[in-house]
Image 1 (cartoon, helix red, strand yellow):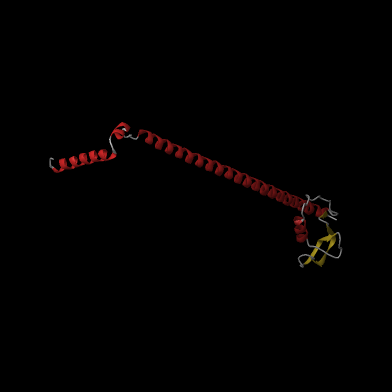
Image 2 (cartoon, one colour):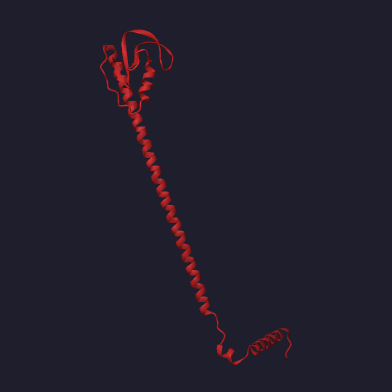
Length: 180
């Protein structure tokens, strides 16, 4: 036995044998065969074993088990390092995805906060503009000329209008050159 991961044992036999892979249905000739713990009649090729191990959820980094033959020691150690680097790469990708997700959530929160601030500033600016408009209107009302109340009280309205008419006619006559 060389490795045992995800409920599958990978074994190196002294002689190569021909078998059909239970996963990919390929006919393989190899002395390296993976056998599941629960069904000894199934055989997996080396590629399918690596795939199944990589797909195993919550997989731990592989533990190297010394091979039976010194010739296979280097290959088993190399495979172990490859699987360990794949596991580490998968963990790094998961961490990066979580970091991107957290950053996106923070960006959305910041954007919402900025939008709320902008809306509040716009509302405050509108309120200030309305206040300035009201103040200007109030000042204009206070500065408007008032008809002398003593004049209106002593003369009846018809007399005031007649005087205004007389003055208007005089202005028009002076423009036309007529003197009355």
